[in-house]
Length: 550
Image (tube, rainbow, N blue to C red; front, side, top):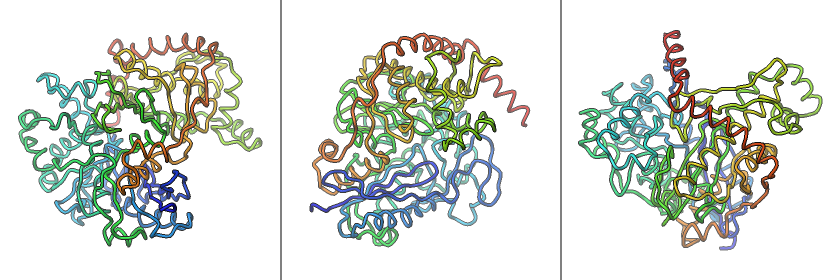
């Protein structure tokens, strides 16, 4: 079938994107995007019920709308006949998790539960289970649970167990009603093929599934007696490997999508991890940084090591036969966006408009002319907390060196640099743990900013490759669908034919790199001072704020 195609659907934080991809060569024929009607619920439920701080929920019906609207639209734009499509693959933000009945019905779709916050999808950036996460980590540490080391010694508030324990402790009635506590990545596959298959990626990275087992029932009982049977009654499910066939498209899903009933539906996957093969990173030592509102760093290696602050190391978590590592920064593009919203004066807006630039383009152009260190600033990139290597969502941002002559472009550049320093911190954690990082390949929307890319090459002293696709995750999902449909033997073969990256697009400049070493030394001093307990001012301010708002 030289004209055979696959569809990849990438579920992001605010929208879902469908891409039609040719199996033979990975050509992206067309795409379509659908924004979720309810976006992120972080202040109130659809019925007006108020939400506490640090909550972030979604409505699962919005995910089905992507199948109804974006998939047919992408097919039409591609001019592809439905019968040319041999498979569909999906990827999702994670850990994005929801309580459902035994048949897969989300609890929030039961009319009498529409006003209960815990009935909804908890989005990856729902951080209201921090207290539960702290207890999960502390108890595992105390008991010497071996799986804790696979997560750099800390379990995140974003993951399955913390969010489930919060559900149990804050709404036990809903916890009882929950037949399955399920990743959205697996729920959407269930909706497509009528079978619930747990994907190996989220089980390992977000569900503490290591060496064939979850945390034990006696550990869970020690957390909370009511939590003892959580794994056996709500979580455990046969696990499908990435690229495996989960099932075939049901009549109902065929009606939604306009695709033929019976085509291959691939096991679910995570947006970051699915991007690695799309960026041709199928050998050890090639780190993919998926840079958008946040950054996820994923890499496969033939070596197992304990890397401080990693989000997880999972056997086969990205590619079969290799250890898959994940680390990340919880705020990157979000930080630049925050600065533009709050630090871009009217006079600058007028200048930018006259030059036909948006705010980011204007500040980038102004900042690009500076010598390294010329602004006299150094910043910490923690406006959204720190994921790796400190794993502390209660940390906050810092800019040091402000004077009366500091300009908006100075602060903007310092923030760009701060995120690069954060990535270098992560790379150094891998390297000092014995896991080499030879090359960085960048995917995601921020590849458009050439200054930012050059800063990353100079700061990390590594060549930067760039993925040659605007839809990296959707392309990766489509590639896995091609494997599930039998078009390729495995994901490595699919990556060779369908993957796309340009190596060495940005090369480090030794002069600038040396200048950045001096700034990075200052960043590390501040990083350890505020992040490792010397000065707990950020945590104290958070408590003061909580008391003031109470």
